[in-house]
Length: 136
Image (cartoon, rainbow, N blue to C red; front, side, top):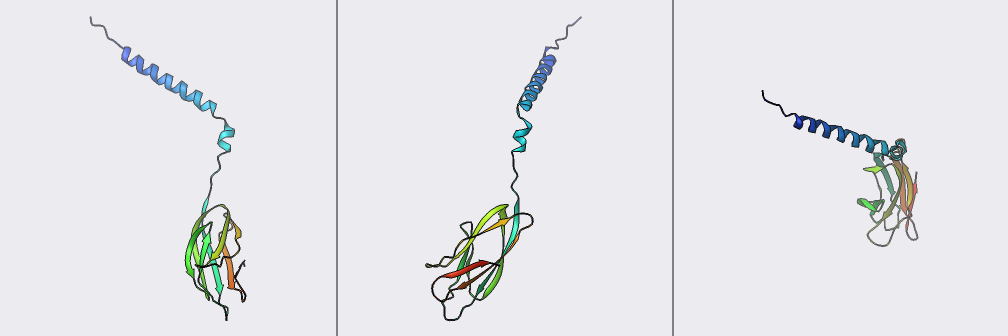
């Protein structure tokens, strides 16, 4: 009669049991509080409308539109009202206008969330120096 060697199978079973025990111990070390602190950041398609008014007797230089220090439009012309679609994460952002020389407007903060994805801004060159910029 031949003897059968089953040591290979019992070795595999022992290994599987050991892996399951290690996985259970590792999982129990991660508390539910650790999982609650993970925050997902949502992104939204945001529409930014800019109405750059034409002002007689001024330079009416084209303005570059900057959001979070990134240019989203180069040379938005005076007398034009255009909308721009960009993707932004939920949270606070800054927008301002800057031309190719020395004009730069104040920065305006705006808050993006699921209920706030459309923003309307206006601008006009001052009769003296600079550009006025406001949120409608």
